[in-house]
Image (tube, rainbow, N blue to C red; front, side):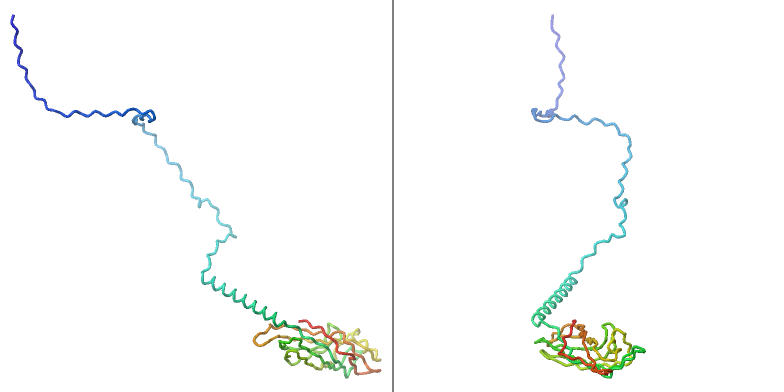
Length: 267
């Protein structure tokens, strides 16, 4: 038997294609986290309403009370400097005045009653009235060695009781130099002034006797030296309880007998 020849095969031309690269597998690391699986298709969530917005803190805050006051703004720098200058000037002025006062040491003047005479004394028991003339003499002494004392608005008055003046007169102003003594002589006339029975017991008897008289002086005193001067000070001179004696029966004159009587000075 004879072999049948095979039919000729048709050759096809193959085009060369580049081989697809295989992904390179990295060796597994024991400390590495296992890969997460891919996202799974999520089911659609049901629609939700957004949460309500919280209220504003200013909407629920309480209104400020009536006594609340906001802090004032700081004063400007120029105003602070001006206030500091004014305060410093007052401090310097006060310190200078205090130093001058320590150096000069102002002392109150001294007054004494040197003479007191009553004349033409007439007392009427029917209406308790008194008519008389009071002649008084005061000695004013300035003990300061560096200061001059100026007196103004001088008023002298006399009474038989500390609370009831019966005669008042004004005196001329004057000034006293350092270590100076000045005599103040003045007259006070009383014409039909009421006098209480207790104050005029010596006048009632008609036989003379002794009664007490008060002589007082009020003035404004200023101490000065050159350009330095103190403020105006009210001064009172109290010569209380001065005894005056009538001479004889139905005497119309009385006199203060004795040395100069020191008076109290309130300054």
